Image (tube, rainbow, N blue to C red):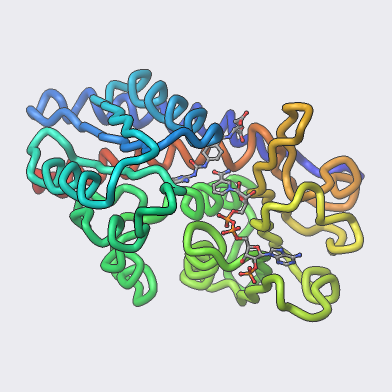
Length: 285
Ligand code: NAP
Ligand code: L37
């Protein structure tokens, strides 16, 4: 039995159509959602993602601007830009694409973004709200992952979810979201002993490591839902996930492909957060 493939691309398309209609309605009420993305330096992957984000905004009617700053930009210059955007009434969402050049302290930058405009959900206020179960702007990739699991129609409550990876961007927040959905969550990482034994118990396996095709079928329980967050660009230009798709697809019940799985959902949730921020700022519900 081969797994069903969860097409993030298709799910994203359908959500974006709904968001487009919502934006038209907001515009009638005099609110035009706006996102500003800041890209510092010349990280090749970041260039690609930021261009995709800009294009996605245009397609659904979000006003978007990309501020490109030089690799040698100082922390002060970047902070000044953020302070300006915090004050700008036309800007509802601010996203600083990570990673940043080494002379800039990522924490200081994230802390400077107004929490109401923090469409990445990385500000300590939003992270804290997620941890204690208050409404907040949710980090894009984890939120997208949750939507993909929902798509399968499987109840999350009571399931054993195993997450590989504990980064602030993916592993940790997706674990909190799954916990909030009443899954029993195990978080694993590079120091975990007996990783396979643990992942083999997962009903839902979320993989966010950054190691091409590390997760083979020996890591997966037959019938599990497998979400592959990994986006690894190989030397030949091909993009592959952290999961060995060709063999895991034969034992999983559902699996996400790379590309076309989590990636398109990440961008869709960014669009959703920008609309959410605009509504919050203008006290609309
Ligand atoms: P990261 O910050 O590098 O974190 C990787 C995590 O994996 C760490 O917690 C690390 O453990 C753990 N790890 C590394 N090697 C391991 C091993 N052999 N066994 C078990 N755990 C191991 O990466 P990230 O930002 O979370 O991203 C992970 C992947 O997702 C990357 O491929 C990235 O490109 C991709 N990504 C995709 C999207 C998307 O929208 N599709 C968004 C963000 C990221 P330690 O904590 O112990 O070091
Ligand atoms: N929100 N996301 C946010 N903030 C950041 O600071 N770095 C970062 C971030 N990461 C990010 O944007 N990741 C990401 C990864 C993959 C895609 C989009 C965003 C994506 O759409 N990937 C395509 C493949 C694109 C390709 O060919 O490279 C996919 O279908 O998976």
